[in-house]
Length: 96
Image 1 (tube, rainbow, N blue to C red):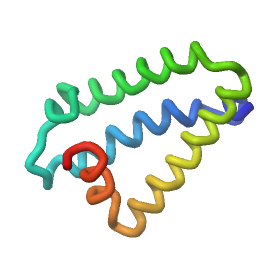
Image 2 (tube, rainbow, N blue to C red):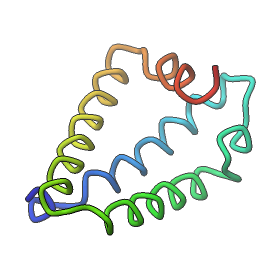
Image 3 (spheres, one colour):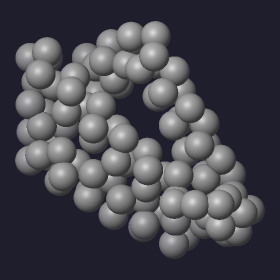
């Protein structure tokens, strides 16, 4: 199980998504309210709460798969940040 290797990757994903969205929102015709949040912190807390609810219902094997998916998403988010497409990709997911 990946949890023993450090912080929960899905929780890290919530935090990093909030951080990236905060940066991207500066250039978008959108606000946190458009993302059903009042702020970055609210977005991150809601994301973590949603994950906690989902996590509670997962079987051990499903949890391992979910954690692996979050690790992959963290890697993809980092790659998009490096290649400069992160805001375009997130805008397509959250705004457009």
